Image (cartoon, rainbow, N blue to C red):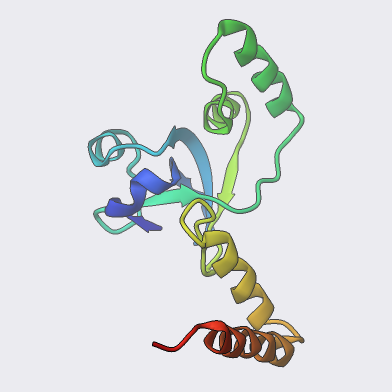
Length: 148
C-alpha cells in the first residue's frame, strides 16, 4: 500500500483481495502514475485505508501473452508502456499481485540506485567489508580536500 502523495512515482493497480489471503489481489485495472483524482475514481482497493493505493514495482512474473499485447500496441502508434500492456493483460486473463512487506527503493531518483545497492550490500555477508570501504572513501575524500 502506498500513500496518495507518492502516486506520481509509481504504476498503480486496482482489484479485489483473493479470498483466504491477506496479501494477494486479483488485478483488474492498471494505471501509470495516476493523479490522486484518477486514483480516487478508478483505483480504490477494498480493505485498504483511505488515501492508500496498491502501487507496483519490483519483480513481475508474466505469461507470454504480454508479448503479444505489446506487439499489438506497436502498430496502433500508441505510446507503448508496460503499464498499458499490463492493463490489457488484466482484461484478458487472471492477473495477480502479491503484497510483499519489504523496503522499496526508487531507482529513478537521484542516488536511488546507489541507495538500493548499499542497502543490499549492508544486509549481506560482506557488511563489514562494505562499511570499511565506505569509511575509507570518506577518509580519503577528507585527505584529498584542501584545507582553507
